[in-house]
Image 1 (cartoon, rainbow, N blue to C red):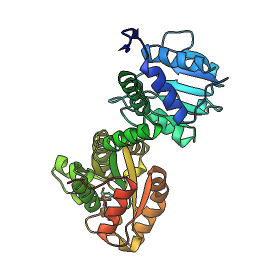
Image 2 (cartoon, rainbow, N blue to C red):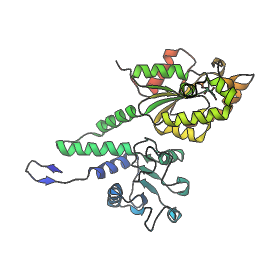
Image 3 (cartoon, protein in one colour):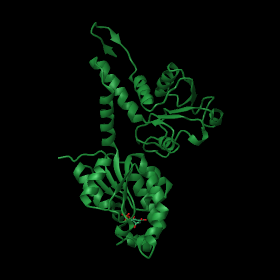
Image 4 (cartoon, rainbow, N blue to C red):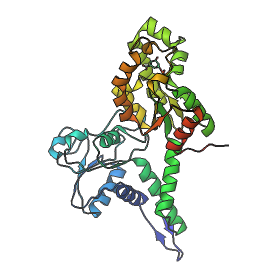
Length: 333
Ligand code: S3P
């Protein structure tokens, strides 16, 4: 509620403006579209009103309503899907309101959840190449609307992008993936140091927890036990915000890990020529042809998870600079 210059009181709903601004930024248009809104709480009401004002036709999906999660197939012709429930929100980040493969004509996905930055729902939209927007965009644009109302001024689109990018960069992790011995740990440590971020190395955390070195874990407990520990540690560190994370070379092989890797992080694939990879202390890299075999099994997954690829065949400082540049990071004092 704003008191105007003439003393009158003016009420507004900033979520309404934030929601529409986020949709428009993602190129999602509601006019004439069949829209499913998951959830029936406060944000659902706002989304419903905004969509209908733009000419969309809304069906609300709720646990106890006539249209619910058990008869979703009735609405497989939906064109835009909007999640206003807490499904997928931290700490239950594996949840999602719907499997998008059941909506073959879906052309837009909106999630109001902003922790994690890329919910499972959004990750699926991204994989299926459906335009999408996450909750952080709406959170920022509704705050912008509030600031505009309180200060009776207008904030430019460029300024909004600048604010959004700044917050998103600060919140997300920079996470390194790539072949064993490609330099992830050393590069990650340096990037963390330069940017003032906390550094996590999943192998170091596993060693700390088990009190054993990685080769010992492989020889005494076996690879499967190592992978279980790796999955556990990775799912914890991927929930951090603003950290730098170095992962083990095999982390991308499990689907659950790939989801966790992308949920809150800007993912950099450190790509180093096979002939330059260090093999010391890496049980799976030992033996003739072992490294090329790992590479052929993994390369596709590295590429699938990556937001950026950074070559690391030259100097250490050049690779550090390229990671910083790709992640849009600057050194702090
Ligand atoms: C592994 C890579 C290692 C370590 C473990 C298994 C792999 O980490 O997690 O030896 O499967 O490629 P680095 O990638 O840091 O060497």
